Image (tube, rainbow, N blue to C red; front, side, top):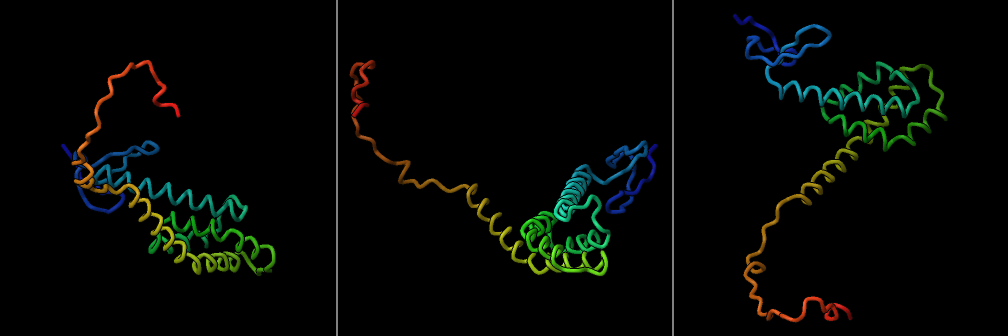
Length: 170
């Protein structure tokens, strides 16, 4: 007999025989589909990598909660990969600001760093989109022109001694 369960991601109600089950710390968690769960896991890994990169740039183990909140707000418009790339490109500006500016509190410092990122993120986003389009163009299938296929080769076959390689040497 199946019982009703709720998806941890979308909140949709389903039954436990249909839902995808994941056991975490001895507790069963149910999701609508495996694809939905995998997508959420990839997004979580991407976010964790972004937060680690921010911590490495700032030289701290724990990123201030204010900054994590602002990164989550940026996520509404940009992907975590773009946010991470922006932090990497603005590293020199951020480090300069941390060394030369005198901040009153951690909150002010975090807001200043986020404002640097927000001012540069659109440029990085456009560059990221351009790079993705370039990669797509490289792997796009180009149609083979029929003229190349229909070439008539009129070169006679040379049946000379196979061990003679002097014709290849110039």
